[in-house]
Image 1 (tube, one colour):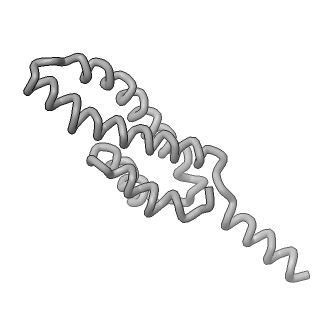
Image 2: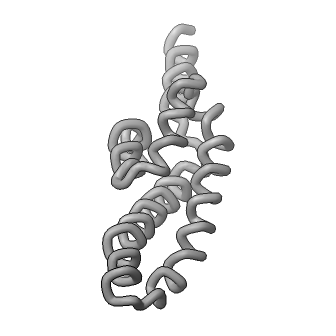
Length: 112
């Protein structure tokens, strides 16, 4: 029978990795925390001599950054990313607004 075979092939292609929704959330939070750290907390630290916001945002951003990197490596096989794509996803984490680009380009292609 051709139909069950086609269905199983199709189902495998659209199978969503279990960690994808969590990874998308971590990517969003990591991106927001990075932007807040770069464009709000750091200027306040140096212009107003108030390091409070950097101290407040630094640790959560660090945890989210590490979670983003670990989860990207973990889901790369399920997402069938080659090494180049994985490197793009990883490098985007150190570029402002990079995680938003990754979500739109690589993660939103699957209905999550």
